[in-house]
Image (cartoon, rainbow, N blue to C red):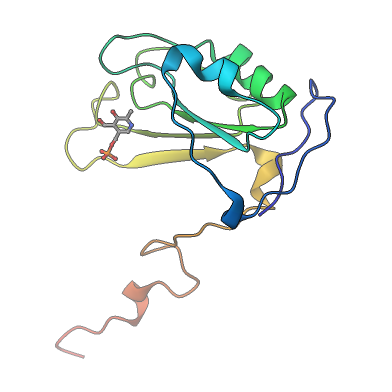
Length: 146
Ligand SMILES: Cc1ncc(COP(=O)(O)O)c(C=O)c1O
């Protein structure tokens, strides 16, 4: 697993992390910023809270995490279609979301993910979906008539 890249606002060296060393820390929203320290690898946050509408300041939280050497993954499910967001401008690392809420995609509409451009080459997806393999299973499927 690659280490989080040093951001333009970070001065500390980044640590190596292994899957065996990962500890999941869950804290109230109000304590998230204080909980991010030099041992933090990834901060996972919902940008807009589904119940209260509370919104994190995405640029400053991202910058704060980067300053500690951590990546940030934003859940934008309650953001897209309702609140403007510029992932590129704040160099957000990762984002995910669904399209059936404020994008009005309806049942079955696709989810989305975003990986910052300079991180893409160094990451390998752990899960490859139906069309995510070199030879998708659909191309090897035979119909009853064949
Ligand atoms: C914060 C958040 N993220 C993601 C989702 C999408 O979840 P799912 O992929 O299960 O539809 C939801 C749906 O309610 C949500 O509230």
